[in-house]
Length: 89
Image 1 (spheres, rainbow, N blue to C red):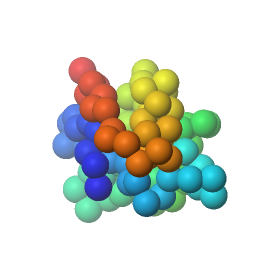
Image 2 (image 1 turned 180 degrees about the horizontal axis):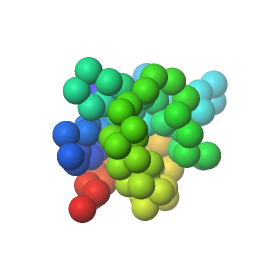
Image 3 (image 1 turned 90 degrees about the horizontal axis):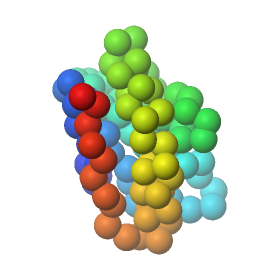
Image 4 (image 1 turned 45 degrees about the vertical axis):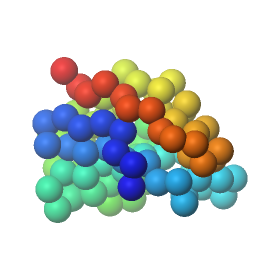
């Protein structure tokens, strides 16, 4: 599971095996024992859950880095190495 960012105890990953035409562009956010899949367009929780504060941080970060997330999703589809994305400051 390629890690693309981490901040405030939250780890952001994307999986190559989920890329393709049959899956919506998304990433995974893990905070402790909590995990959620977050859609990129639109930014929405697809599955799972995070504590409210952690989810707020993830959504803020994702809004700031939407293009980079879309670019990484294209890399997922092409099975290329993913680019790191700056953490939330």
